[in-house]
Length: 518
Image (cartoon, rainbow, N blue to C red; front, side, top):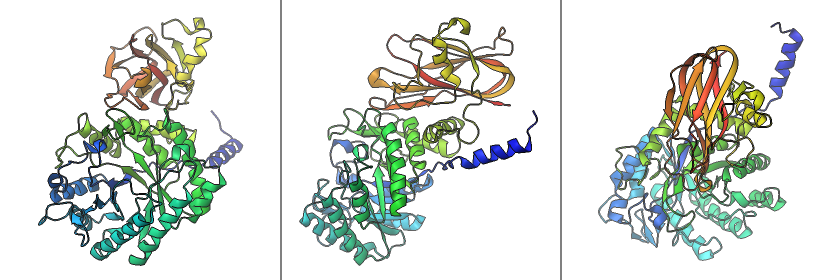
């Protein structure tokens, strides 16, 4: 095909008009929770302070975090119930006397590894510290002074995390702004030049278009706001959709205010009910976590941090007092595989980027855009499909569904899936990957096995290749997607994907992603 100079200029202009796709950032920070608070921490902390404050365990944890690029540590608390996890001169110690404190162990290791630490100003009493209570603010200021005396000159100490969490629904209250500003005044006085950070919650219900939201942010004398994405808390049935839209609005607000913001993504789910003190935090499936990472990266934030990697993404064999009830170590290997460029996770990352940006990412996500669907679920030729054909054709339109089963881009294959795609001519196919949805609460599950067959003439077919569907365990509460990847497929014009029907669960697929050499 001949392309004129005018056409080339036009294509260049169109490309220049597209907004830049931001690179996906890894998680580089995490909160450290020293206190066993309630049953939420059952698989994160021991109640026995003798075990939970083991300095060697905490040193090993810092080394493991550093290994996967997590170099920013935020203490969630340094005291609980008026007992300190550091050598406080004013409080009883929350660790055996004669032993190095856990805060000392963490600071020493972070100094050694060149990591960065935000010390906490809390808790004055407990996790229920009231931001509007002047005595709580005063006590947190005293804690900051003690910590500044002990650690203010440490190379790893970079600032303060102020655990004055309050709700952003509909916006940060005036009492929170006033309380935070009292704390930051002390922080800047006792450690000049160090950063301050807060991490409010409630982004799901924030009124970002309300002028009061931006006004109160402008009044906060703080360096960094790390917004909790609340996907793990499942504030909505399908939280990723609202979070995507809210973070786009936050990007503009913070750009106007010239205020740095980070995103704190929740990598946990729940073993029983959500958001109560009688249910334990356990690792979420990595497909959900990767969607959050991509979403945060596209939001314009400066850094992605996560609550909490400790007890959720643990290195196999790491010195840890507890073992996860289900699939804990696999989260580490999945995350490490993604960092290493694993083909499965890289392709899924491209999908999530396409959803966030509304356009293909890097190499076109699906080379088979517009490929003709020859057969439907029941194997009838396309000319006999009538109205159903347009729905089935959505499998190759290059447009992906969001994490909501009512999104019309999801095609229901509960009765069984037997779809054949015509690529137009024989091509060298590198990979085939159908993408599926999981939402256990609506009995929507990914298939246990997926079958691939190929043909160059539509009559003679290859031996079937059978692959396990995405392995999902911790799926009680989350709506998320994943894919089954077939690699090194070979020469083919026709590609057939088959999945058995189910009497007890629904199967939803939005796209069959095919990559080939053009």
